[in-house]
Image 1 (tube, rainbow, N blue to C red):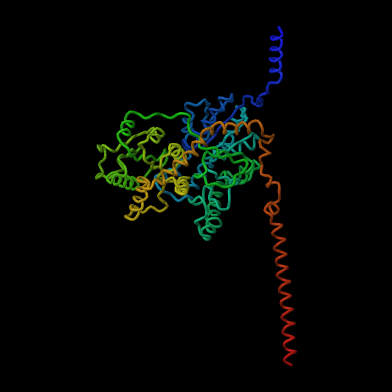
Image 2: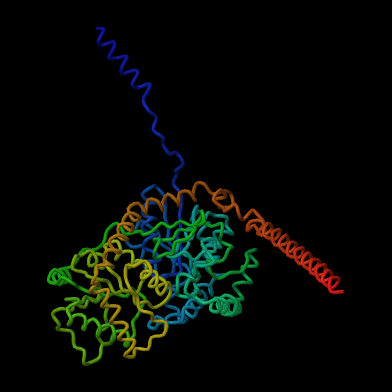
Length: 534
């Protein structure tokens, strides 16, 4: 009996002294809307992965975009509505004709900003009505969807901006080129002083003036709303807005970050299509395959295709590679003399299971346009890269890839396609294909570990950030506690310019006193000399 009593006391003590497990109690179902103007899979799929997690947590999710972009919600628990018309902004005539070229960085940036902003007033009212009727509690806006960001701000709904690169003012540094209209180089390290002066004080202001004239009706409408006129997300007007950047350090140049800018990438899909029978047989039959794909929007010209295939065939003949797998190649672009349809070591595919191809051990390297989605997938699978960029962030990504040591790129800012250009391309591509000292692959293997670690909980971390904005924002829709305290301090004091000014005045005063002392000494000395002579 005593033993039973003691056992009862032990059990009671265990229950009384047991630990308390902290349990979150903030979450209630909310309504979330994601809106974009287009841009393809790199602007949408990773956000859909986060929204799927948000739906799993009990929230209702909607997607408002151009008609041809709504397909990116297929397979996700997301309600869709068309906003802003039927067509991706990249299909606008201002941009479409440039996609098969290697356009000047500023030209295509101007076209993109104008195409996104010209229907701003109509889109504003469409979104405002939707936000009200759907009782939206949090708005997620693609960085090109300025009408979405401003509608949320005016409606005082918490808003977050999504992007694949850190183009924001509160993510800036004087030595970083992170604007849509900046140069292709990620930093100013190799830029001359005169080049920077010309760009920042002549070229860019001229672009801004031109855009302001073309979008005068938009700026007038923004002023009516009580907003400072703007046409891109890099303005400091959005410094108080949380941002999520689906990228990794290395591709995105490392620097100090704002408390409101979150480097959340890379977000890798939960699952991908496996190899089909044809691609599987081809890869299993080869050991060193070059995989070539240029995404949804980049369209290589006939000159591009000729140089690419001619160089790849040379690498094949020389044994650097033993197979070529090219996705979405238009064979009509090849010269008649270049017959490859029956070549046993070349496989052309209308659509390719890219992630599965990159995962296969026979894939030696990836020749890509440099979109972040493709870069993330290649680096996750530790595949060497050669970037052949076209537009947008691709030229910048290309230079970043070479800078971090995981691949090479071709500078296409002025493609001549002459013998010298062909030679340079061959030498660079051969270096990636053969990697004689295994330097590139060693770097890729190390960097791949970072990418895999960063990807492991990326979706959940991003969903946590969305819920922070949902439940912690104030009545103005802002995360006030994350605002940089520097914004509350006068810019003179914030940059210690008042202190520097004092030291400058003291230095000038000291300089003046020393000069006066020297003059007095000199006069006294010369007077003494004259007295001696006399």
